[in-house]
Amino acid sequence: MTKILLVEDNEMNRDMLSRRLQRKGYEVSIAIDGAQGVAKAQVEQPDLILMDMSLPVLDGWEATRQIRTIPTIAAVPVIALTAHAMAGDQEKCFAAGCDDYDTKPVDLPRLLSKIETLLTRTAG
Image 1 (cartoon, rainbow, N blue to C red):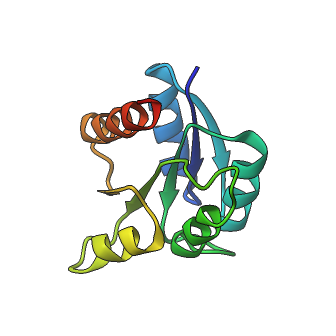
Image 2 (cartoon, rainbow, N blue to C red):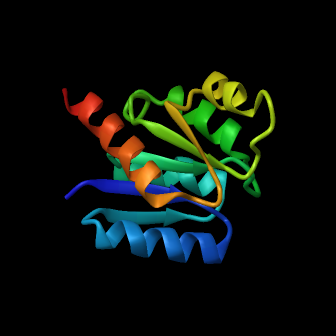
Image 3 (spheres, rainbow, N blue to C red):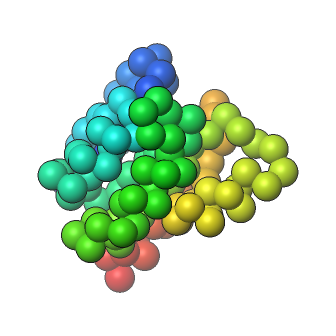
């Protein structure tokens, strides 16, 4: 089963998205801040990470930068999830090491398409 690590501090977003991903057949692990996200990624070795960018303790940009420096998880695809849809935000996410970018509120079909594209690319 494909494992997705969801790093999200908002309980409503976390609950809604994790349930919807589980219904699509994904195993979902959850972290509630960036530091916990980096730690869980190392322990659980997920197939993909959904990273909220506005997080407590360690924001999503710094958490992604740290993940990219850890050899065992550096290649795990990261999709930035953010309510920040201002000019330059997408570039900032890519500069931090994210593989893709999606805005909140989450459009599930669009997000699932991005997840599948990245998982296929990593498997190939």
